[in-house]
Length: 361
Image (tube, rainbow, N blue to C red):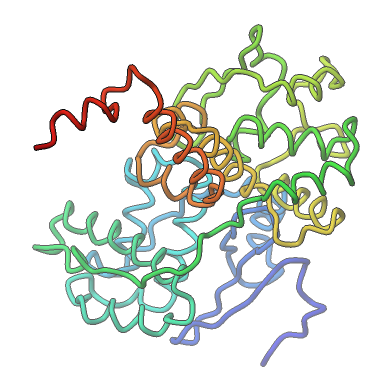
């Protein structure tokens, strides 16, 4: 018999898997999904619920081995491995959300029975969501790679399997007009303006922006140790950021605080910035798009990929190229042509016209 919704505490979702077993989850925005023990409203349930609603639920799950060779058992083993535990907290949340959903559907199947054709069929069913399909494929390659480490399989069946060609660019990169619109709506002394300028002028992820404070400022530099990659950066403070920080109290642990005077969580900050963007009439903009806008500005200023990486902390050329894709083509073309003309007119140019002509037959 189906329970009435009003018997459930807030944010509790109940499902039945294909075997009819009841599964209970807490799904509260801003917190990782947490699996809760049954039965609903029992003492074990309330103990786990109260812990999860406070954001204290453990990301790792306890082993639930049915058979050593099942996909569910493999996921449990991966959660306990250094491969998973050494990931950044935000990355673990992302991985866990995808793995848990995958094993809800296929967890009882043997690992050795998961073939390339099975993965292709699963991805084909997600053809209308190419980005989600490609993300799942990356996670499954990691999972099957771990199965190979455990010698549960002799070869990774997903090696070389390609996802869908993506026509999207991910998070929208803020344009200069959108930046100006946000600044026009949120005055320079506002918390929203501080948050926007902090991300735009440092090019950092929201997980790093929420931890920045005066203790990280040394002279004209701001120190950042990235939570995701553990990279240590020394970033010069942009004049626009210097102006905004001049109006920021020095008594707080972090620059940006919640309405309760506490540091933001990364997810909470993202949700709050979503509201600030909506208030400015910018529904396409997000906090992460500011990181991309910073990379775009650097590219438009003529910075090399290595120089962009020195600010943003990206590790690979491919990542920088993806982030700077929105660099204004017209501006870049004008700069490139200006350099070409300057090179032609410069008598010291290595390819001066006169020198070149003497080499021609």
